Length: 140
Image (tube, rainbow, N blue to C red):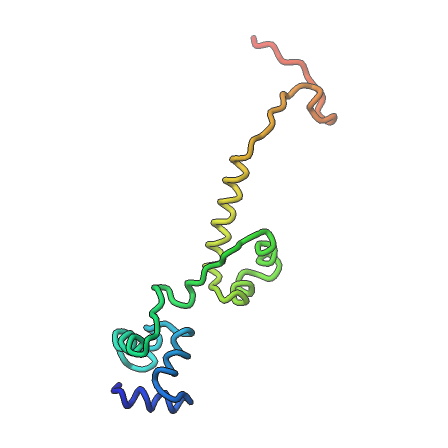
C-alpha cells in the first residue's frame, strides 16, 4: 500500500488523513491486526505510527491492561455474574481476570499463614461440650 493508498483508505473511512486514522485505530487494534487489515507488514505499520508521532505500546497491546485492585467484592462479582461478563465490563480477557484472582488468592493464603495463631492447650475445659473428655489410654 503506497502513501496515496493510506490517505485514500483513511478518507474512505471518514478520516482526514492517515495520521488521524492511525490515532483512532491503533488504540483498539494491534499492529499485527492493522497490518493484516491493510495488507501490509507490521513493520510498515510501525513506521507509519512513528512517522505520525504515535507511541507504540509495549507487547500485549490493549489487552495488557492491569487490574489494579482485586478484592473480595470483585471475587463475589465474578461468582455472581460470571468471569466472562465481569472481564468484558472491565475491558479485560477472562484469562487476565482469572490470573489476577489466582494471585490474590495466593496473597490471601500467605497473609493467613503468616498471622500468629494463639496456642491453646487441648484440655477438657477447651474441648467443645459435644466431645467428652476421655482419659489418655495406657500404652501396652
